[in-house]
Length: 139
Image (tube, rainbow, N blue to C red; front, top):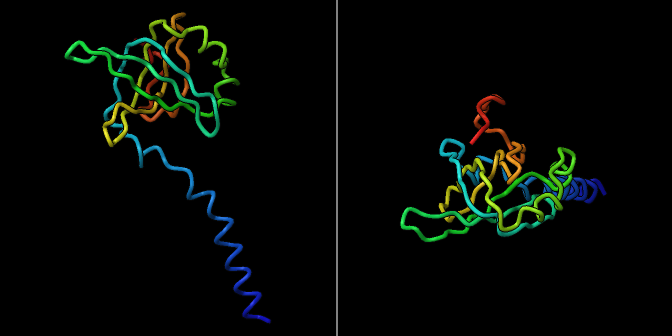
């Protein structure tokens, strides 16, 4: 009986830890030492948990448009700071600026730390890995 109880407890402990392994840390996927400013056109939005994403078309060095897929924090966290789904949708087709830390895989993906939609307001939308002061957050 003790062996069965021990196995049950061990199984429950492992299963309860599974959700912690499902989520990634910022540094696992993104390079916080190579953050950059991107300017482009807002073309898409994915508003779902655990992260919201936006797409923006950015002009590459060769003059061609490249689509960046950029992660933000949860929709609920965005909403609490005034960045609603509607605000993003109202900016489709408009110019935006975003501070983005690229994915380590380099496939035009990244995580935004802050951005400015067409109204110019700086919106915190991700982890502040660069630890910039408010005065340093501009485009």
